[in-house]
Amino acid sequence: MAPKQRTRNPELIPGVRKVSRSAMYHKRGLWAIKAKNGGKFPHHEKAVAAAAVAEKPPKFYPADDIKKPLSNTRKAKPTKLRASITPGTVLIILSGRFKGKRVVFLKQLSSGLLLVTGPYKINGVPLRRVNQAYVIGTSTKVDLSGVNVEKFDDKYFAKQVEKKKEKTEAGFFKGQDDEKNSLPTEKKDDQKTADAALLKTLETVPELKAYLGARFSLKAGMKPHELVF
Image 1 (cartoon, rainbow, N blue to C red):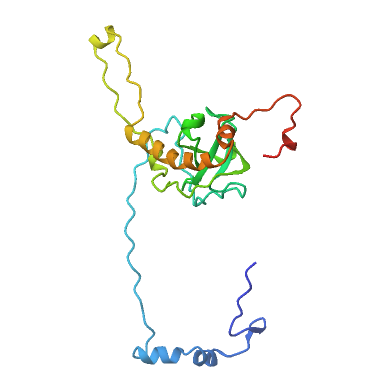
Image 2: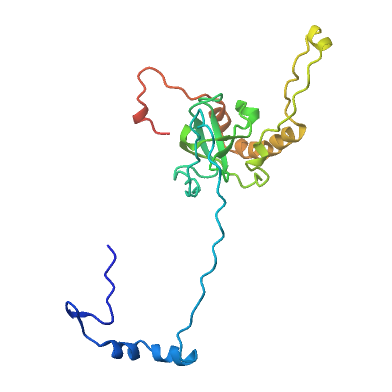
């Protein structure tokens, strides 16, 4: 609750103020303002407001309710990276096409997603983005000193929108099929460059290649809450 503002001339009893009107006139300095403007108080003319344009009401009500967009003043905060995930940490993917695969975490992108790689030569997982909610961080780490990932950002993984080709009558009878989207040569070269430096590091650690190539799965009798990753 906002505090009450104190008046400069409080009421002693109803109808009786502490200071008279003439004393308050001098106390507020109104005499100086009056003397400055030739014995009169300054007068400011009110600006003429523009006449509102009268809108003609519609003859009929709309059949459906018109939805008004809600105002959203919330600013997106950057996603906080889990403490157990640091560059070089081996992660286990829990969902999606590569469920159960072990991958190497490279860096966090501006969208909050994680940039990971298999490497592709070991377990078939290419450079891709993964949500940290669907991975398990392990205690195994890989040295990334020779891996350069500055080139990769969210725009790198954006899909290219292509116009659909018009199907002709002749192509219909010939069995015209849609062309399959093939990966650009540039992205294939980027995959090889990123994995080449990483594979050199993996060769120095015994059995690390076999560990990344093995798929994680639970078997009968295994208790997930007692596992140490």
